[in-house]
Image (cartoon, rainbow, N blue to C red; front, top):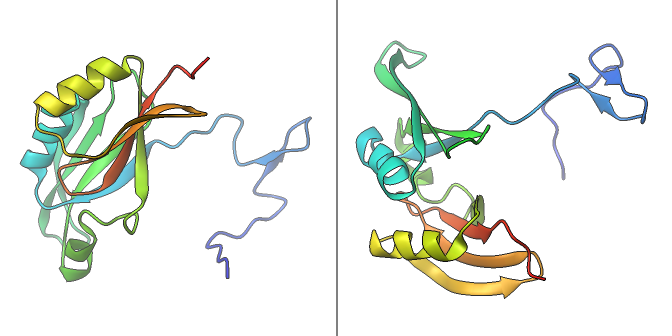
Length: 159
């Protein structure tokens, strides 16, 4: 059973000449929340090991007024970033490292696969699947600091 949480009405969308409906002429995913145990080790992993940029680290408050941080990391020159969200409560703590239910849920595409793989291996990143070639390019599966599975992908397709 497929559930949709948003209702679509003809007044909420724009029809483009090709017949595609969209909420805006330009649209992209800005952030994806990644639940982590703690902010600082996650920041160190994503910036120090993977080479992401720390875009923001600001004090914030939970909906009930407790302190938290708004932490955003992003690969260099990328539009989409990760909101590193510290687990708040038992339910969120249970999701740390299992956000995609054991599947690969995140995909990091790099322009120099061999260099990225070597650097990550030397930095102690755990690879659960060694590099292999698929029709869409070279890929290896690694774990982030929380235990989530990621594909490391080559930007160049085989040819």
